[in-house]
Image (cartoon, rainbow, N blue to C red; front, side, top):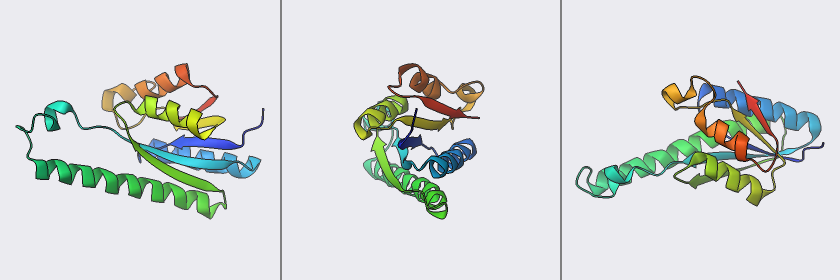
Length: 148
């Protein structure tokens, strides 16, 4: 099996950065390109939908901070790819379900391998294999390389 396009979801965590490094190394060795991918989750409706708990200015501040963080995460990941002369692109999406966004992107972008961390920034959910990673593994249209 030959891989030409690796989808690399990253949340900026240390383990996720290690997965990016592994993906860059693999892509360099096999001549593949990368799409670095970040999912911004929707803010809970109880937080922003009603408007009683948080004023609109606070919501706007949270959204801007999330965008800036996504930009920072993908810029840092992209620097790894550039240093290794690996062709890469980037994409950020807003989605309620990170695994759903990853699976949609894999199909839409024609990825033939997903390289991702075993868990991310989800606290106790990440003690074993992260729930988002489990969902991607069980539903992916292509192979998944899990870095731990």
